[in-house]
Figure 1: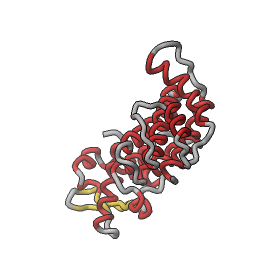
Figure 2 (figure 1 turned 90 degrees about the horizontal axis):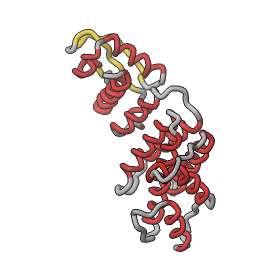
Figure 3 (figure 1 turned 90 degrees about the vertical axis):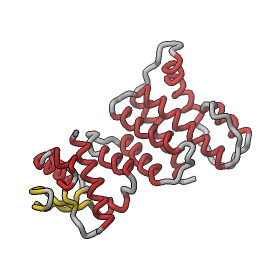
Figure 4 (figure 1 turned 30 degrees about the horizontal axis):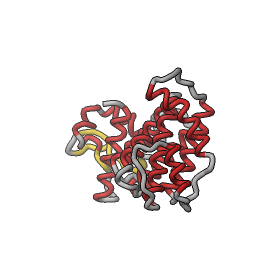
Length: 241
């Protein structure tokens, strides 16, 4: 079990315990997988989570599972981390190293979309794409960032069309979706620069998929610009429609 997997499991177990009884401490070694990691690894994981204000209190204990640690999770996080996916995302973000404004923006979008009721047709695809976008941006995989951004923008535009009963073909890409939205005179605000954003995305996205020509490698600055365009669109169409 990796350090991240152990931390996620500890948080998941702690939250489950406090949902049953808000005054209870979770006993780490009650979980066989956690116990197998050993008390030294558990202590390190709890210390790490404590530094990030996830774990609120740790106490030594001698219970049914032997000598070990009992702990509580921050009450605010017990309230906020409502699903396993949200827990995994929140704890996983603690392991990604130094943050930037853009990586923070992606994480905020992911957290917001996880909590938001989204059309079931696209929800899983949107969340998975945001998680991949976060990883790709962190690892400087900017071609992948632009490809994922294009997919996310398509989902947002299709959501607008669903919301306004505008028929569309699921194979349409950004340019066609924008054109059909204009033709339908949709009242929903769509940034006029989205066409330019689509052009930047397609310069990397289409060659990467179809291998027709040499792929132009986007700069970090281009990736940042596109990611923040995605953020604006998600905020306008998904989070605050």
